[in-house]
Image (cartoon, rainbow, N blue to C red; front, side, top):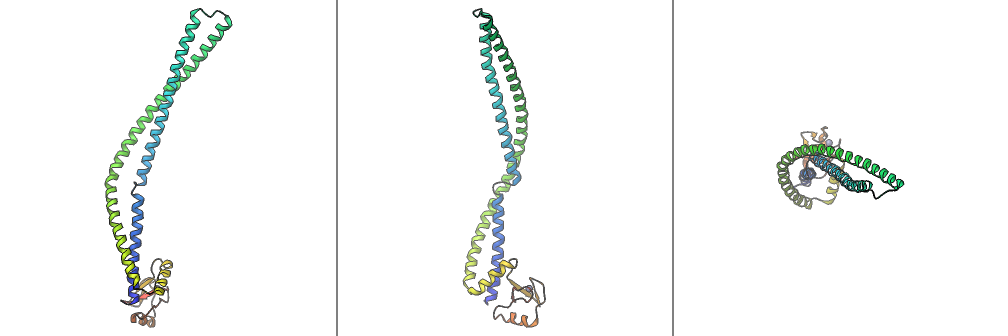
Length: 233
Ligand SMILES: [Zn+2]
């Protein structure tokens, strides 16, 4: 194989290799779930956390209210029992009792409020969980296809890597450097095929003298317009 043909073959391998690499990255990005699914999962988690927090608030208010109830009953007994006689003490007891009753009233309000709020959140959570479940099962079917394609693409990737190593082994170092240099600067196309008298990469006409050189295949000939290495079959 002449060196330019070998270079052209290398470019075909590299182009396919790049495509597969991009596809693998794309597939890997999706393998944890689509962005919508990830967002839906996060939403359900957030609503669930909100529900737990609201239920905890309700429980705390209920517990505090229950313990206040006991203290109110005790104070009531004390007040009604007749053991406390000093007007000052009685007044303090009475005032404390009223304050506890007010506080308990506030706690009971909070508890009811939290309960109503928790019910509303639980309804929302049930709705969103149902939606998420259907998204998850839809995803499972897609995920299998993605996993299967990933396995296939990884195999292709490795196969092309081997092909590339074999192709490179036959190409002279200087030529390879020129190829890499051009590929990096010319949108991944270092070697351009001649189509009659036109460069297929930049679509400019190539001078007759240059074409003759390319056809002889006796070394590196550049397109006078775009600088790519010209190749004639
Ligand atoms: Zn050109």
